[in-house]
Amino acid sequence: MTKAKEKVSIAVSDDLLKWIDAQIKKRRFANRSHAFEYGVQLMMERSE
Image 1 (cartoon, rainbow, N blue to C red):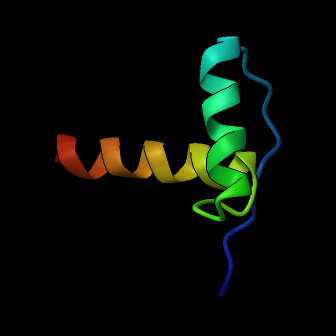
Image 2: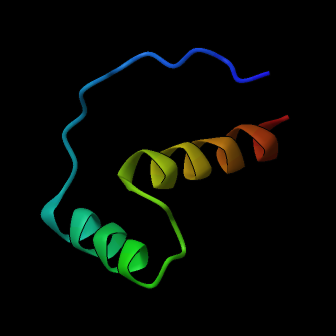
């Protein structure tokens, strides 16, 4: 069962956005949301 998602707006550096977009082109991430969710999930797991 998929959890509901809420839209948010964030500001990120141009360099970070370029890197994320490059990873999307390499198919590491499906889209920008996927990249941010992946990164935050890793940080959350490492902090536990």
